[in-house]
Length: 398
Figure 1 (cartoon, one colour):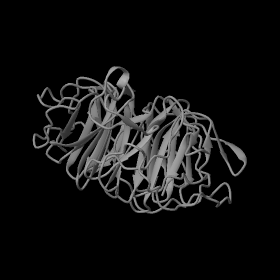
Figure 2 (cartoon, helix red, strand yellow):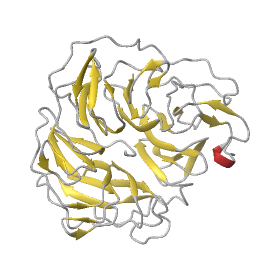
Figure 3 (tube, rainbow, N blue to C red):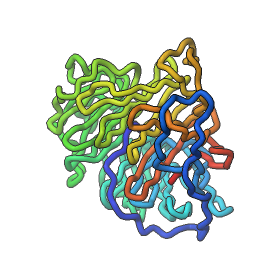
Figure 4 (spheres, rainbow, N blue to C red):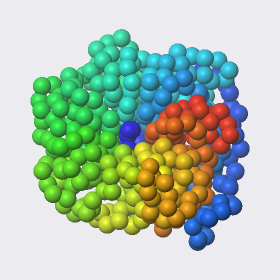
């Protein structure tokens, strides 16, 4: 994601041993209620999470992927070290911590290159990325790991291209990215694998004409987003589309167009949400039929999106949110703006909320994931400070 929207998550925390007994955390509290000057009119909704980040491990390199299993947060990226409780530990691009305490866990498989996507299914964690080995054994871009021990499973394939997004559903692991072939069989941006046998699903073969950045499963639908112009050659599938469990395009979701390249997708009971790039960036709320409900415009790319308790959270490269949909060169807001540095939240009616924790850095936030069971939002990226507190590459909110 990266990947884009939240994959299906299994309930129940992993029973992995904590590395540190640290239990301190920032006060939870309610979100700051005072709207910023120039904020959109309308009563601001009570937010699902607070603005103060909880205690988390600190990482020495970028975080590209997050997945939650109960209170356990799995982390993937380019990092090689994690710091927790005043001590530094080797963590080669894969790690896990307890969201409730902030303690780094003993879960520590190793990857020899960047991990870009994670998904959880029961007792398994699936990883995708640029790597060729995991825990010293050959694994070409995809691997399955035990969610408790970190042991490497037998799931192994030859992949041409790289997976950028993973999602679970319909008894399958869905992968999206720059894929061109799996085990010598042609694939174009998308592939699926049996969760039971680990085999490539030879019957599910939708094809995208360009890169897929986001894959999210909701009910019978597989939502995909990216830089593509068409899926399966079908008109009306520009940058965002729905594919069925058979691999056909679902024509009941046919947005006229996504405003720019889609970087992330999230789905809840009210609709579908996309994070896009373009001139500046946008968060777009759709109905389940693909009609636009609302749009929020930023002065930089929206990279990731997550939905939690009726609030849509957005992360990316932006520093401000525009008060109207008009922006100009380099994304500059033309009709006024309010600060929203790398993170923002939008209410169910499309109003910009007052949630504004402010992350630093140029790249900012790469990935957001939400877990409704424990009411937690996790953020990952290249930031080192959020809301004035040191949070290197990972933060959680509750």
